[in-house]
Image (cartoon, rainbow, N blue to C red):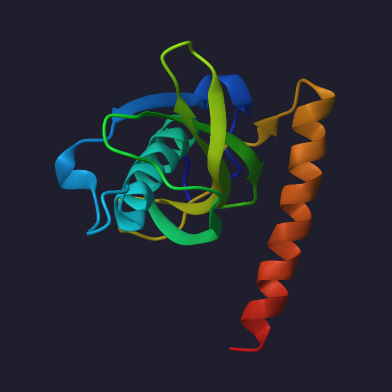
Length: 163
């Protein structure tokens, strides 16, 4: 891992850390109404985001925030969830990961049920923030996502100024 005072020597592409995870919704994942418990989905989202961040920085990470956790519709027992995580923005020590959660039906069609942005921070051996590799943007879609991530980062900083 890079030392705290030096920039990371090599960037990484979005594809190098992109992660897809599948989950079948089982009875222990349900709330009292027989639908997926929102807290369980948050755990799966945080797990996928952590995997993306670890793959990007190559080391230890911690979750700093989860932005924009919105539930578009409920998920029933035995439905299959597909969680797709990809890096959208990096700062000096922080990383923003977008995780899209979709339900896949038996025909392979997928419908979006949740989108979340998870902020991860890379840590050194002393649990202090450490630099992360720059993000190599290869497509217009990736450049656009990075620009939107930069706007969210500025907004988060502005919000924190009031607390």
